Length: 108
Image (cartoon, rainbow, N blue to C red; front, top):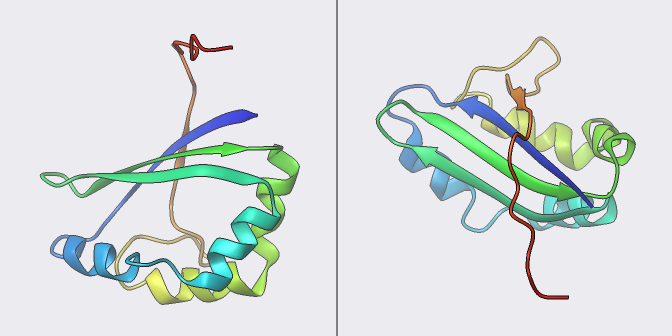
């Protein structure tokens, strides 16, 4: 399993709406993530700055990248675009983070 982390950001004043739209996340998007090998996905908010920290465990970068081509993902991006900066293709502006430390689970 690959541990993946990245940061995104929200426009000022949109954090409550961002949370509301994730409670719960759209079923078709959750199913798409699962079908593409995404596990244990969390997004955290730093409220003072509007920065989002995302963490996911993925089976492969290739499968992760193909999520962008799915109708569920494209719909979700369109749904969220008024809350956060996006790229020309509609994907949220995101910066990948490089892991510099990991404490493995001690249980076998």
